[in-house]
Amino acid sequence: MPPQVFTAFASEAHVNNELVEGLQSIEYRHAKNRYDVGAIGTDKRVAVYFGLRVVTGSLRVASDNATLDGLLDSGEQFVISAALRHGDAKRTVTFQGCVLDEKTFSLSTQAHGEAIYTFSATQVEEK
Image: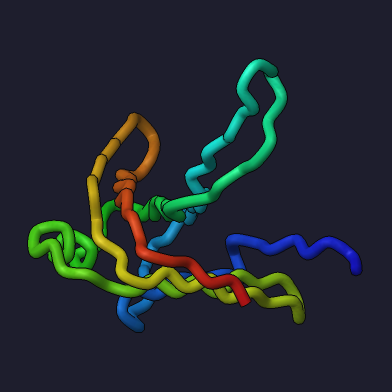
């Protein structure tokens, strides 16, 4: 199967089914906690146990987003759905049980303002 290369220009994200206007980028990470078990008297690993899955991410938006600002203030859970596209190729990434952790804002000379909304989620599904 050839690799899929998605483009930001053709992709979009929704928060609670509302389009995120001015989206510049979406980044996310999901990882499982891992516990290594070593044998007594040796430096060899004999087993691995996996635990909690942690999902974190960020949305970079031109200027700011009133919906995300409201969710940051309220602490309510929400859903993010990102449609990643390029030509006929498409992948949908859905984050459930999201909460906003932080917002940062920057404005520099000869550029527009950008807000970065950092979130965590209970799960992520890629289709």
